[in-house]
Amino acid sequence: MKLKGLFLFIIIVPIQLFSQKKIEFFPDNLNIQPFTANILEPKLGFLFHISKNELRLDIGNSLDILKYSNDKEIYSFGADLFTYTLLRSEKNFHFPVDAVDYLFGINLGYKKNIGQNQIGLRARISHISAHFADGHFDVSKNQWRDNLNPRVYSREFIELMPFYSINSLRVYGGITYIFHVDPSSIKKDNYQLGFDYFLTKYFGKNITPFIAYDLKIIHINKYIANHSFSTGLKFGGKPQSKGLSIYLNYYSGKNIHGEYFDINKNYFAIGINLDL
Image (cartoon, rainbow, N blue to C red; front, side, top):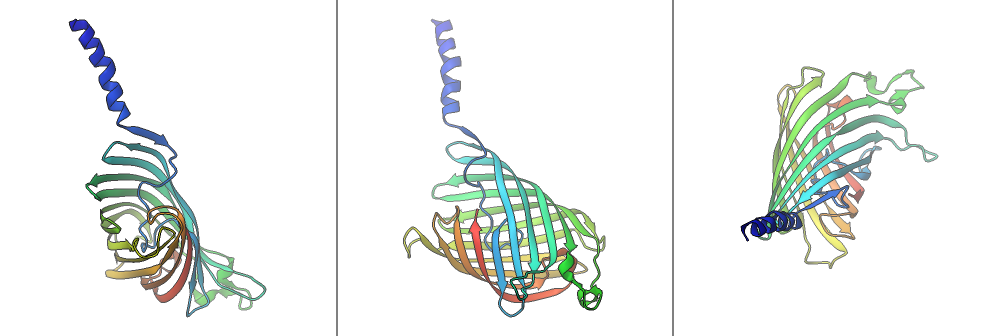
């Protein structure tokens, strides 16, 4: 009887434990959705500057490769690969590319349910490199636009972004450590704070207003505040899932493109994005 009981314990207990857990390869949805107002997120869309003949084109994706979950916790491992590009609009439907930045890396995600709320963390290890393109060259003057010649810009960094969600409000704060950067005069610590809030109770299931803000303190020769504010409507899907967003964005701070990293930027823009 003892051997029979031991046999049943060895067989049944692991089955019960395994049934409470789930392992997925390439799951349909991201464990940690992009932070809405954060500039450095994977996007698929356009940002049309209102007061200047510029637009931003984002072509990127973040993909969870492996997800492990149980009743309360979700762990994930994934990859990031995207570009964000500065263009101008010219006649005959031409859009010269001025500058383009590339990001690729890996990410780790953790999320835990606490009643109706959630806590979580996203960690990223990434590389960014920046380049001028042929649209930055003025053929009529045979020189680079605004007398800004191409320069080497790249950085490798570790980012930690913990967050806390209460219903449709998500608040986050984080730190970035840049362990290698060119030019070397750029300092290695950045800090971040922000939120996104989806108003889920007002327009039914298919239209969701949202508001989001991101503050990033970057360290070049001194600490500088970059502000990004977004508000708009998301169509289709749940707030933290795939859909289409149309929004107004305000940005103030240093230019997000590496070739212009030390130049101030201030603008309003209209955005269209296919949410991941």
